[in-house]
Image (cartoon, rainbow, N blue to C red; front, side):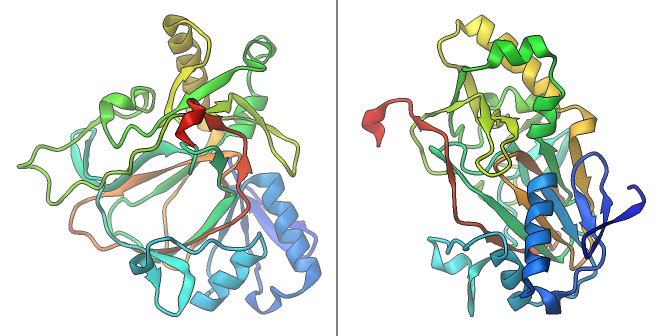
Amino acid sequence: MNDAQHYGQLRIMELDAVGVQVMNLDLGRLHAPEVREELYTLWLHHGVILFRDTGATREQHVELSKIFGPLEIHAIPKVRVPGYEELVEIREQGGYYVVDGQLLGGFIPWHQDSCYTPDISKGAILFMDTPASEGGHTGWIDTAKAYAGLPDDIKNRIDGLEVVMRVHNAQPDGMRFVQRERPFRRPTAEESPGEHLSMPDFPPVVHPLVVVHPESGLKSLSISPSNVDAVLGLERAESEELLTTLIDHVFRAEYRYVHRWQQGDMMLWDNRRTLHQAFGWPPGMKRVAFRTTLQGAMRTGRYLDESSR
């Protein structure tokens, strides 16, 4: 981390490579227009914000979240927090994988939320109630920074191209690009401590490879490593070569931040310009978090087969 600096009334400190920490958030002043404006502008500028040592209650988590937009209500009632319909409790591990030879639950490789639909979700705030005693980290990659760091010849090459996104339903062999960083596999029946959770099937969608942020105007790469399948209109070999080059680029250390959670931490991210990954934690270990998700999706995609609507 770097030295603290002032941003209006806020005292902030840059995180490693991506995002900032707000050092002096006064939860009693969330209603103040100048505080709300400064927080929103800071979020658009940096994409990822850490709030630490705030002592936030469930009500304050929701109130803070609403500064950045109306909140979604999850379609499945049983995951909602009683009394707080905008909050979702996250404690189930599911998603068991053997990662680098270690069995982990809660592992969700690098992805952009909802990129397997035509609409990219706006963002979210995750509150850590009980961090895992081992592992359980979460990472973010700034795809706007990654785009800015591309050589001009590659920027020119990818301008106007589109990519096909799919749900590979947690099958590692369908996630060949994300495996370039960390090899993983499904556990055997003997290794797995529980049922593996799967995503519903979604029809493939097409998104621009370069997306313009609807509020900041920044360009970013639309290249979710867990979901991207091909560059539309290119021969397979050329598509694989180009996507491999781009994904190796976004995986570089200067475009990512990995967060080691403390109790009470809150992380806010702009899903329109970031990827994130849950690194997982050992089976049977307690980890409890609460999440709000922002309404106001960015429609950049279309169905590959329009009859799939």
